Amino acid sequence: MFIISDKLLNKLNCSVCFKYLSVKPIKIYRNRAIKCGRCSEDDDGGVVSLYEKIVENGLFPCINRYEGCMELLAYSSVEAHEAKCISSQYSCPICSSEFSSYHFVQHYKREHSNSLLEKPEILLPQDNEYENYYMYKENDMIYILHVDRGVQTRSPFRLGKRCGLGAVCRPSQIYNS
Ligand SMILES: [Zn+2]
Ligand SMILES: [Zn+2]
Ligand SMILES: [Zn+2]
Image 1 (spheres, rainbow, N blue to C red):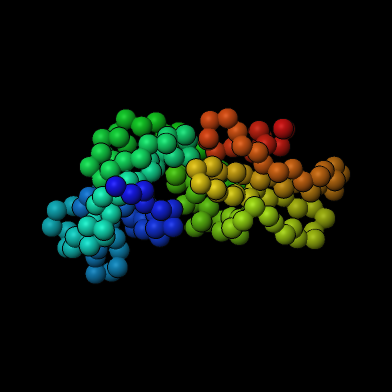
Image 2 (cartoon, rainbow, N blue to C red):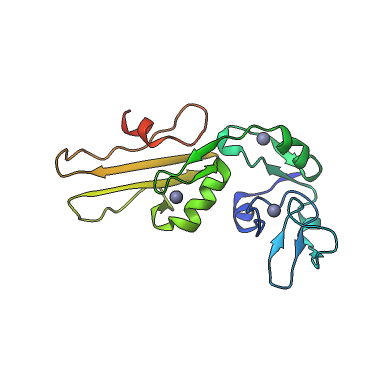
């Protein structure tokens, strides 16, 4: 058994639910879509991908890893585990849409890619008034960095810090700390 790397996991997501391809069958379609077993159906025109064979002996992290679930799961046990694993909803600090922690990361990638940090450093624009919520992800932790440079307060920048349960930090928690 081997643990499937984040590098691979980041590349291979279901085109429908955006989750890891950790539930069989993994099917590919003519339009290049790839679906996991949570989303594909019998006789839907998809062809079972070789990817399945490659990761057959691999262990997947749970999709609720950012909420503190550290389980490593074999293909066969993912569905049963997800049915009983706990997941909460979090609201995006930029647009207020609600997501599970796993989709929260995906959402930032798709909708707020300018606020997604590749490394734990930022170059701020020169504007006098500026506010943004950056996301930085490292292993199983998500950090939200609230930068607020108001004219009146001239507050120094505060780096987001890890909050208790491995959950997504609420911006207010970071700002008040
Ligand atoms: Zn899916
Ligand atoms: Zn879990
Ligand atoms: Zn958003």
